[in-house]
Length: 298
Image 1 (cartoon, helix red, strand yellow):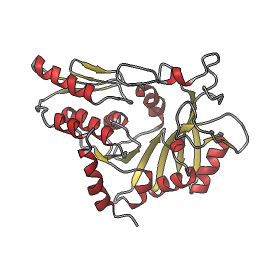
Image 2: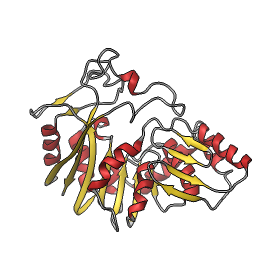
Image 3: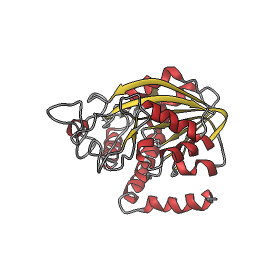
Image 4: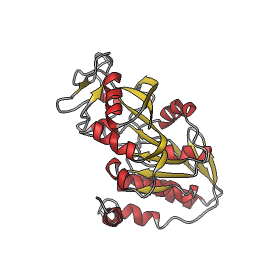
């Protein structure tokens, strides 16, 4: 049994880390303002504020690099994140209705998807992600957006101990980072109310066999990718975890319009992860990233 009250107090200390503390201090200098909010593919926040205030906001945004999810437009600053997360959200949106539902986003990053979910009027949204940088980016945006979204520095493994259960859980781009995918799916199931639903996407490989690719050291230059299943294998994982229904919603290859290098991230992105002579393969010789989007119900 994990005491989440004690754990959360311990993790609050992460916000004092030497690379996070200056960001938190910068957040504390932000002045309040009544901003207009537009929640579309780009989450836009604007107001009539002095130019020096806009310049300060731009400086703080740049201090918080890398921005992986987005995009956001905060006053004069367009945060062109590595991932154009609108593509994934718009792909899934026709399959869910969150009105009056209690929703969790596991691996929520900076909250882009949760901000998008607000337009469907769920009763509650809670994000889980053990990243103090992502929480700080969320707090930065939410300073102006002023939502009631709750952000927890917790992960999949804490769901079963959390005080609330959820009607809908999103777990997007997380499962392949877990060395025990069936255990992770069991934790997700334990976080759901009876009749609840899980929306999940993960890397996949083609094939009718019930197998999974196990990368040697890296997959697409990412070291913490453990298993890349076929769809039949993923279905078996969900059944073993206790889900009663499994539905494939979409299959989509990751393209460079969705994940790419921008000024808002250091280092490399998808273009650098693929074989320069054949983009159907990663630099390691594995099939290029393709995702399956599923809905599983308890």
